[in-house]
Length: 405
Image 1: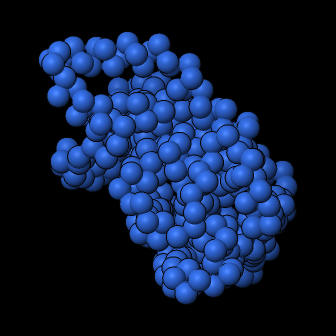
Image 2: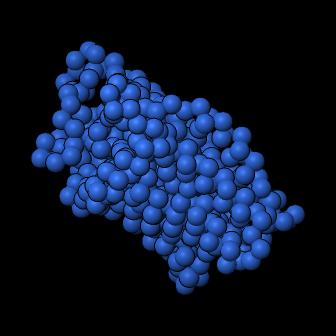
Image 3: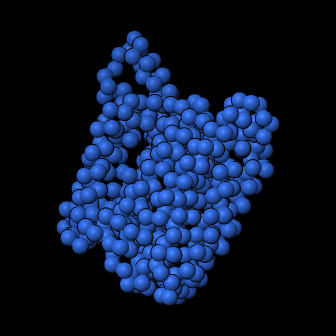
């Protein structure tokens, strides 16, 4: 069902633009707790939806609640870890973990949908409820909010929590225009935010396009069952594991080079972007591999194995560029992440809708090749920022000017 997935991703378009800036005003914890609760409620509503239109509405609201971590967690890790090496490793763990749900989803749904499509949502709800206590016990991390609360506690004019909340809401709505417009301003005025967002949007939408393309390749072409077709996503996981290992090893190597005062390590762009340069060629390789090896005369395992290259490039590029955005826009990292998340979610809404017509009219070979050519074009972005990134940051209104350490 393409439409429920696209409406879920539509929630990811709207949510980060609201929740990212709100977390920089109200704090990380209230935003994450509220949105996680919202996600639980509407996942339950999806499982109990009486009609298809009701399911579509609930899926959008479910995506709206589930979108907050994409915008908020980059800022949260920036609050906790001032050291870029520690922050990068922790964020890479988050991104590594976040690739499992979209990959395991088709596998689980391919088998449980035989019982009932509602069990797809019951399974997701069970997993989400298990993680809810972690959100409940999470402390606030955003320093300006902690300082404001401390000043309020010491104030001679003691106000109730409700009165303080009302005052914060009034002040927020007074400043809402400037607060909520910050992601839009950054994506228009900041070349780093715009180009990184475009790159991430393309490879992110290709992953979601695979949810429609893999059934065309492995179910229609090869005649595999829905459950076995879901297993075609598994090769992406070892590629992701290799990408995570590569990120940690390079980050450790860069930190040692920095402590040894090696000249190349003193450049901020050397911290993350070489990893994106390594991952960039593997995305078009995976797409060309998938397109031209998917033939009835070739065993389906061969096109499946293209997922190893895709998983490696996908996760390595994501870890490199998201960390680069956080490093470059430390104080405004939630807004930068919101801008990137919104743009890639727009792509993830639109591109899957075009999958069936594209693969029907162009065929598997040329539809996959077209995506490969687009991936080749954007692959130059990290190379450009290695050369000109420092100059762009120096002339930026938002970018941090901290020393490399």
